[in-house]
Image 1 (spheres, rainbow, N blue to C red):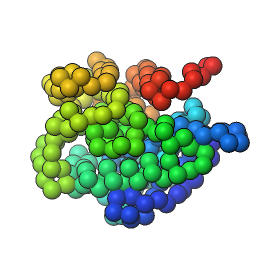
Image 2 (image 1 turned 180 degrees about the vertical axis):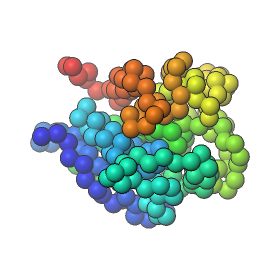
Image 3 (image 1 turned 90 degrees about the vertical axis):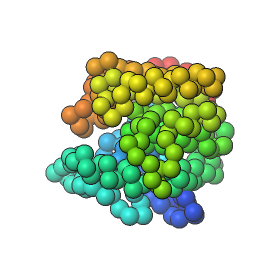
Image 4 (image 1 turned 30 degrees about the vertical axis):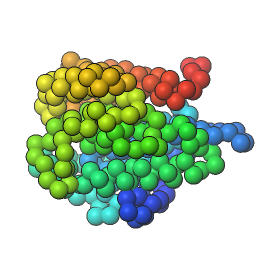
Length: 260
């Protein structure tokens, strides 16, 4: 029997209880597994993100997918059995992203790390974060702010906001010199929301700061290429990114390589 996904509640930003979906890696008695928080796309912890959490658990990483919309509820179309991945309009995505406070998200993700670290079956010294789209941006920021996380993987997180407001007070690029942990980041060169010049500027700032990072770009991929429930999915790039992600996490968390 593989990992079982369970709904949990834990203290997020400001001590407020929020929702998560947890998949425990298989461990023997007394063994502690590495663990990670999973920051979802703007669509929340949907069926795809829950599947990703289970996939990580199968690979030995206990995973907590954090529901960042716990307080107000999902602001866009909600999944149904008939339509598990409903389409959002660009306007709905934009409104949701710019209404969500970066500070609150970072508090929620750090709360998820604290919850994982307190578990008897988790190694509190081997905690990472992986995020997709909106969540990719936030795990990168987490790597610039949190003292709990040891490595971060950013799947096509936005680097430059179209506008700044009280929820988005600084451009993500501006945090680059604060990055304190190894970073692996993936981008598609056909992503209209993250043009190549933004990625080039990101790389330059990380290099200037002598940061430990790797940026991988895929010439034929656009935004959301990892999500196999949507039309943007690219199988070859997704498989390559998954392999690179597992290798990166095992290396940076100082784990033994699997026998696969």
